[in-house]
Amino acid sequence: MLRGEHVMARLVRGRLVPHRLAPNDEQAREIAEALVALYVVHLGKPRARLESELALVEEEIGPRLDPRRGFKILRALSKLLEERSSWASPTETDPYTLRTRLFELAAALPEFPSHTGALLETETREELLSRVATETGVEDPAALMYADRQGAQLLSSFEPPSPEALISRYNVAQIQGVLYSAKDLTVDLGEEADARLIFHYVKLLGLIYSLEQTSRGYRLHLDGPLSLFNSTRKYGLRLAKLLPGLLLTAPWKLHASVSWKGREAILELDSEAPGLTSHYKGPADTGEGDTREAFVKAWKRAKDTGDWKLEPGVEILPVPQLKTALVPDFAFRNTRTGERVHLEILGFWSERYLIERVALLREAAKRGRRVLIAAPGSLNASPETLSDATQGDVIPFKSRLDAKSVLAALG
Image 1 (cartoon, rainbow, N blue to C red):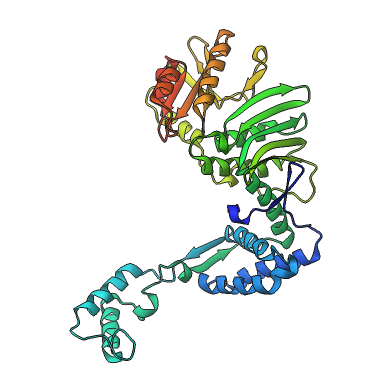
Image 2 (image 1 turned 30 degrees about the vertical axis):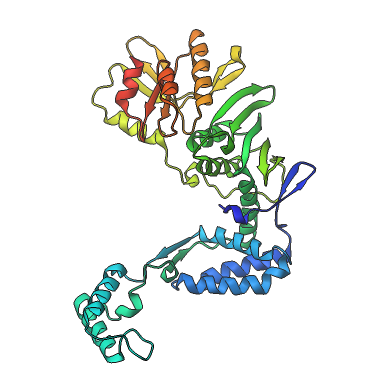
């Protein structure tokens, strides 16, 4: 995704319009094609050389695309191509060890610096390099002593996108960049939308959500990064990763309240917006680890789970009396008594969210729906809040949720 300095949008009567490149703009297409070709020809070459060429391209063709912001657009496109690139060291030898040995030997010499401007006389320098080459087996120590610097990295692989795909990725990334500063987000999913897929993304990304059924589908309320006291950057990136998931289905409408350059603004978007396609092939493309998969493995490794059997969670658990619904991750069935208990694993959460969630679960329990919550203890909630919540059906955990803690809560 793009960094903040790459994101551009204009404010029109309180509504944000993210910058976009027209898919049918021949000039934009040519520039995208030129950037992709530049990365291709630099396969196996140092990063510094590629960056130097990119700087020349910015000066040459950037103004043709946009006289004022052309360089910024090109840098954003390059950032997206960087995500499709892999870099490798030019040597298997540790450059730090190499230069440390060179400096040690140079420091031990009784010779003063050369009057020619070099650190050592030519003959002495060659003798020193020859000695290190013999010791390490490196043919040219001087060429590799700084090979761990970023500019020396070699472009080892690159997945070239089509110009059209790069332009589409740019347009989506600009919208994602606006969502970094969202206060809250509402998504209305139509009846024909794949709600199961969207809920999967919400859970995988660990977003703070509430859900209600509507006459036309579901309304998903998501907290934005500005609703948290910390971890806002990480949460903002997670929230932005939901957008390509939304683009995999239809229909939907999105409404976000955004703080943009010190002003309050609104971002509105729907599945009919032209020129936007997802680069996701499935949930694994978000790049986020799944706490749920880790828990399943932990449960399978557990020696004794009593009479409890782990089952996939129901996709939606409606609580119509409270005009809301839950999306549990798992269900536990007691094979002896037939009791059924649901489990929801939270990702991010705030104290307010946790308190409201516990109150909701207590109300649901009164109506025969028992749901446990597992909450990571990494968001610095006050001890009082965690203590009060734990008296409800909340299971605190650190980095991984273990089967023993869940079994204790099941009772």
